[in-house]
Image (cartoon, rainbow, N blue to C red; front, top):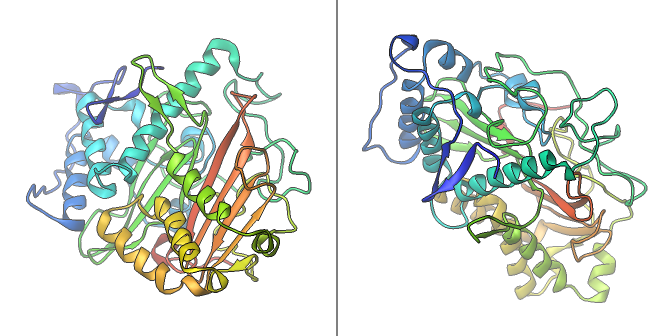
Length: 405
């Protein structure tokens, strides 16, 4: 494994993090901590405890304006702080990183299959990717790019040719705000190139957003008046899709996502598959970074109201892994909403349904829920596919705080 964040007893620690202690640490603002708090108040308390480990400059890099530009500053790209805001994991001491970890634990849940566990395994995957690339098994750097940046074409969404090279091209302009990252803020792989930001001051009576992400990960949770107002957009992907660590542990971070989709599409009859088939081909998700609010006007595929009760249950089970990325209470509330809207929800696919070939693509689109899963050819593990997925909500992205034309 590359140095950085590694699983240790259910947590992660910094192997080569910087330290800022004693006189070298500039006094910052002290934030109140309540260790007995529950719900959103517990998230606020954990966020404050993390902020209290930071010096004044680090606090300023972490607590940023709650603005549309900052809220939408996420990406699936290995572009470090050039496309994200916040403070970088690789710049933190062991104490600071442990406090950051606790924020994610409290906000995303600690049980098996929760968002916190998934974040840990995504970070491990990126260390595996960094190790593989540094060993020389990765592709050559693109002309004019940095040594760790994958080659990309211009269009990150639909492609007329599903065998075309998968794209990871950023669009738009850099976000506002101090990136606050340490060394390695540009392109690259590894768990030390992830960023945490609080957009607005964490509180139980205001509106603010918790943002954590890096390559193949974007966690965005919006809080309003002491409640979770939105748990999306949530982007997650992985390369390699599975690997065995030196200690013999096998990891497959997105197995539950893929398997839930496979169970759903595998239940469809030949006639149902014909109705669900999309005419378009895809080499990435449609609604990735910089595609906020760009939901298709017309829903496509097979309507869940025409499915059997067992198949309807499989649709909900296919949705759940993405929704489980936030705390249990919020996930339960969202799943109730999606269940009520199930008959107006559509299932569609492009390419094949085995999810093992470039261009294999599945979509779930309801009155609220939107989920995409796509296979791309690997960048570093070029003989294998890797996954990109995104979870959005037509009315709850960013807590419905912004309008997108």
